[in-house]
Length: 239
View 1 (cartoon, helix red, strand yellow):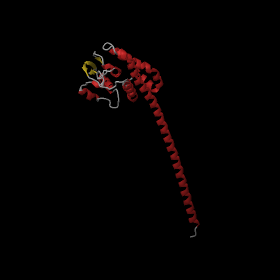
View 2: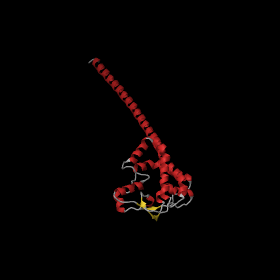
View 3: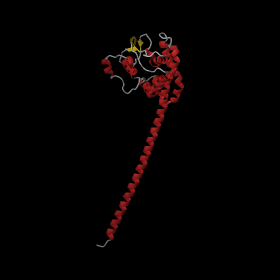
């Protein structure tokens, strides 16, 4: 079960951050939902049985755990009567955009991949994103817009002001997806650089090996020639 998570600060941009990043946990009607770790309660026995959170994930480990819970036949319920105040400190537009960009860059792709382990169309889309990052670049505004529409639709009955926040929700979603895109591009460049460095290292080692073999061969021939001269002098010497 998960709780409603209103932010501690009620300033304009703090509320924008509430709806941008925690928009699924702001409304006042109960529903089956993938829950956030900031306000989640799980039976201890079930948590232990499932092995807890995936410690390899830097983000999205709560949603990934909820998916495993659901696969085991349990329901994950959002219960807004339980309230947890969330103090996130993203109370300016700069802080909101910086956090979302950093979040997308550091762990956005890993989160996308972890949520699509079961395969299906979403897994194919994520695969395309990895292989063709510039195709993903063209999709960024659409992805951010769809995320914004979903948040507005979830919360418009409880808070009409979400319509006022919607342009900034869109910017926050867009910053997150830009972070994912930049990671994809830099990750590919980094991979290519490592391959080139690895190839250069192999080439140097190959040249070193060739030089070593040639040196040993020359040394061997010199030694053999010296031994031949020794034997020849021994045969020619009297008595």
